[in-house]
Length: 264
Image (tube, rainbow, N blue to C red; front, side, top):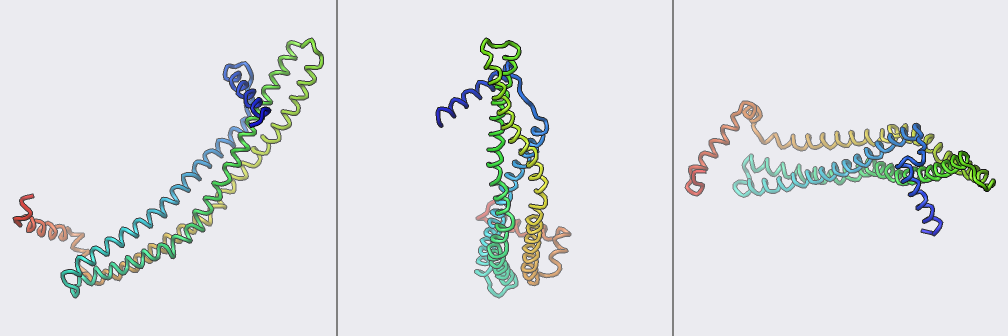
């Protein structure tokens, strides 16, 4: 930082302190304050959306990978006893379906999801640092304006023996106000435009996300439905009636009766 920049920073820090103690009046622009508050909410929501969007894709990968590992283990378990049984064939069919679904994550979800959802979110979030820089600059210029405005007021209330001080201070005030108004008006004018564009900007991403989820779910249902043909039609009814729970409990009881299991 240059000496001039350091000097400005110190002057602004002093102005801020004097404003907090009520010695310098602080200019409040309600229009800007309202738009800045809306922008901050939008910025926070976009940041959360980007984080959750990435988490969703990571979760889908993890789920698919876990399903594949589960299917491989089940296939190994059943195939070790009798490869020709209906249960073994069902386990093998489940493994094939899990493999196809896992491959489909990369082919039909991963790349398209990045292109249509994560990339637009990243681009939107990349604008925020620049906007915040403009807001920060606007706030600094406001401090400069308030400082010189206070200076003019004091010289007006208590004139200096040097008659050139007040005109000079007034000129500084006019210049400071012009710079501040330029930045302030730009932000008050353009922030609402940015916020109004958020829905049409995210519309294609939202639609793409729904379509991808729907397609992936449909393919999962189609592939796993093929595994169901290995099971008796009564299995679902037995489960609904609680009969499968009873069957499991009977097997567990037989296991408990084994001496190696004890009485647990």
